[in-house]
Amino acid sequence: MRLFQCVRLLTWAATCLLAASQIVCAQDKKAEDKSPKVILAVPLGIIAGKTNTVELRGLNLDTTKALRFTDTTVRATLASKGKADVPQNQKKERLGDTQVKAEVFVPADFKGDEAAFTIETPDGQSAPARLAVLRPGAFIEESEDNGSFAKPQVVTLPTTVRGSIKAAQDVDVFAFEGKAGQRVTAEILAARLGSPLDATLTLWNASNTLLASADDSSGDRDPRLAFTLPADGRYFLVVQDAHDAGSALHGYLVSLKWSAPTPVVPK
Image (spheres, one colour):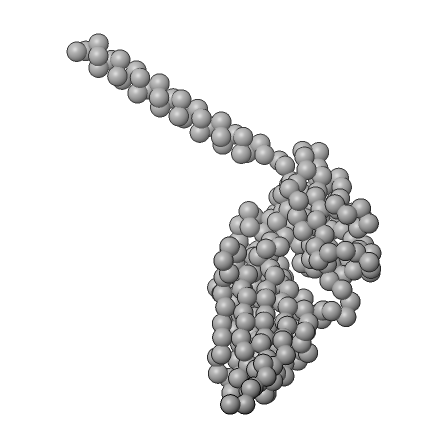
C-alpha cells in the first residue's frame, strides 16, 4: 500500500512539474515575441492624389525598417519611429505603445477603396493592415464645434465624413435636409480599421425625436443604420462612443447616402 501511494505521489509531482514547465515556456515565448503588430492608424483614411502624413500605432514598431504597400504605386517614406504614450486607463494591447510616422503618397488613379500594407522590423514582418482611400470631392472633414442640435455640422448627401470622437463624452452631430420617402443609410468604418471607437448612430428629426438607432453590427462593432424618412425637413445624425470614451485616436469614417423617394401610387 505504501509503495502504491508513493507511486501516485511521484506521478502527481511529475505531472505538476510538466504543467509548470509548459506554463513557463509559454510565458517565455510570449515575453520573447518581438514581432511587429499594427493596431491602428491616425487618420484612418488617406487621400488619393496627395501625400498624407500618417501615424501608425502598435506593438514593437519602434525598430521599423520599412513600410511597404501591396500596391507598389503607393509610396511611403518613414519620418520617425519610437515609443508612444498609452492614454490613461487604456491597455497597450488595444492602442499600442510604439509608433511610426510616415509620409504616404497615393496616386490619383489608385484603384480600390483600401490600401494594404505591412511593416518590417529586424524581428519580422507584421500581418497586413489597411488604410481607407478617400477621393477628393467625395468626402469632407468633420469640423468642430458640432456637438449639439443647436450647432450641428451641415452636410449634403451623399458624402463621407472623416472625423474622431476627440474626448470623453464628445458627440458629433450632422444635419441634412431630407424628403419624405427617401431611404437614408449611414455606416461607420472604425473598429474594422483598428480604431478603439465603439460607435453608435442615432437619427433624429427637427423636433428632437429619436427615429432610429444602431449599435454593433453582426461580426464587428461598426454600426449601420437605414431609415425611410417620414416627411420633408431637417434631420440629425449623431455619432458617439457607446461608453462615452474618446481621444485623438478614436477616429471614424461615416458614409451617408440616400435613395430617391418612393413614388406614391394613387389608389
